[in-house]
Length: 419
Ligand SMILES: Cc1cc2nc3c(=O)[nH]c(=O)nc-3n(C[C@H](O)[C@H](O)[C@H](O)COP(=O)(O)OP(=O)(O)OC[C@H]3O[C@@H](n4cnc5c(N)ncnc54)[C@H](O)[C@@H]3O)c2cc1C
Image (cartoon, rainbow, N blue to C red; front, side, top):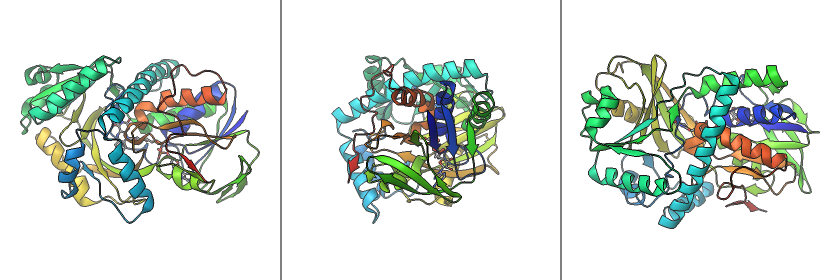
């Protein structure tokens, strides 16, 4: 089949690689000069396969009110005069119900474990070097209540295939000595031993180069998609900054946070909303982490990427605005200063981008009401983690072969409205 993938982020590139490896003729369109220049550029680096609690959960619900008035809170959910945001926000609140959150955890863990298997296979097959650190992720807690909640979530996940383990702070410090110097009172840790970390940008760029070299994938950069046109129940052509594109057997929507804008042009409404996050990158040193860590109080993650440390977090709803707001990035810097006070934070590299977030957590993968259009988008906080698994699911759906895991809770039709 001739397949056109819209978007060369980690999701589009991994999809392109997997589809081309199966013999499809793949073209990728992207507005940036090279792959992975938007949300897949400087993220938190965590391959968080088994920590599967969605943002929308009953434990977060009471915190939302408090965070609403706190400018540097981990998640600031304020309703803007934007109907898409209002709908997204209401769906998010509904998804905080316990039964829904449990279903979404199960879907996230199912996709996470599957993604781990596919990512491990991809790493073994390609030999891509991307500062991969396969040492697990350590989650640390600043209140007994949060630690107790995490242990309950861990027990729930253990019953459905999770493999996490609670640690005392002495055990956590023995595993990660930099925590001995923290200025925070920590109550305990949860180790996710199957998880890992690595540089998303390096990985995506190198996978794109390999896809082009090995399987002839055509990457066409600096083409901005302007309008998608349909005719009956097919996508007929794409209007771009360089003219029109058509004649493909299938199209894959992987435009990240921008996906819903273009889907709406086809009469498909999906509740994916841009959730802005920030990161800083600073030099690794004697007192910085050697494995990936999550500060669960601030929802800031730390990954060691060779001789650099990446810290990332915060969730802000600012529409399609990429500005690096001082107040928000300083929240990440302050978090790093508290947890790792001996770090060299005098001139960190700052970055912000928009996560393509669904209100329930899992991405939207598979067929759409238009018969030649597929989606692989809406990965929110976990696109790096889930890229390999969701690319393989997409390839199976396009090839009309049974998927290796159920698609329940991951499909495109949930919350999709067609008009
Ligand atoms: C601060 C932060 C920290 C994060 N930390 C983690 C983490 O630790 N672990 C994890 O798993 N995930 C993390 N994420 C989430 C992860 O980075 C994203 O889910 C993932 O990068 C999304 O990939 P994507 O390919 O869907 O989108 P993108 O990477 O944004 O790719 C979309 C592509 O579409 C292109 N595009 C958009 N519009 C157009 C247009 N009109 N015409 C042409 N091209 C267009 C863009 O140029 C871009 O290349 C984090 C995100 C942020 C912001």
